Length: 139
Image (cartoon, rainbow, N blue to C red; front, side):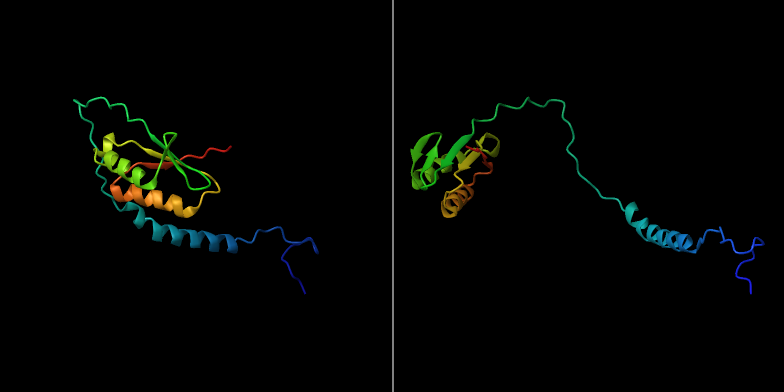
């Protein structure tokens, strides 16, 4: 009984089995046929157009540095401030247009209570402050 048509006798066949390759190629072809129509959909984007008479940007206002210590004390630009006074001062800053509002840079101690930080963020958001950031000062 002969297992190969090879005339050399017992040597293994050196032919490559291409059936798995054809199967993979057919699967890839089907995937590309399904996904190709999805790539042709157009998305309209309204990009800003440049203006010729554009004024140079003004210097941004100095940021407000708000420090929250471990015991919950608040310091606005290195000056101690109570929570109610902070809210009143933030209301003054929030009354300005968004472009002229200073950024609030919050530097909370790693061990400060979350409630104090959350209350400050809530107050700033409720009065209308738009630019709020956090500082990471590793000491």
